[in-house]
Image 1 (cartoon, helix red, strand yellow):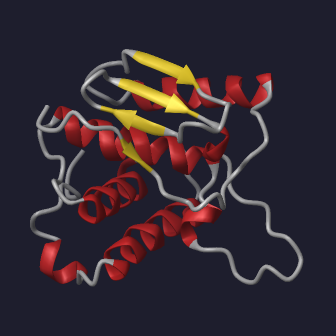
Image 2 (cartoon, helix red, strand yellow):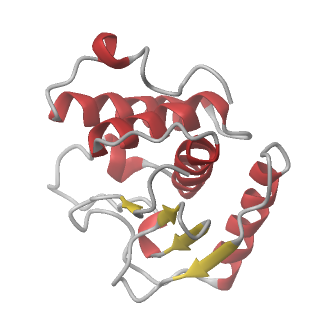
Length: 168
């Protein structure tokens, strides 16, 4: 694996902040098993980090998936305006982003050295290849990926050939 740093989602505190319930954890673990059934191997470690000191993130150097309260989408409050694609990602989309997006690219040696490219690649890969996502979840992941590129002033057409988004 090319890069050993943990990629963390920067949501600005605009994602889930309540501790995960046992039921939510069970659902997440079932979805991880589903993703692993189509992956080259099982993730070595899953760690719950509900203390909000760590984000949900995949660490390729340790084959570790940290899952925190931010795996859940934001809850829109009155007068808040429109939520961004990233704050709307469901827990399934978030797990797919980490495992199908970051982990599978890392296992293939196809991580990106620039954070906006790595994060966009992860969201686009998840939208295209993750199992059992709704069309809305896939669309939101695509919007998240494109928004990350837009914020970095990068055009999709300029990087689509270097991103690992065409095969699982």
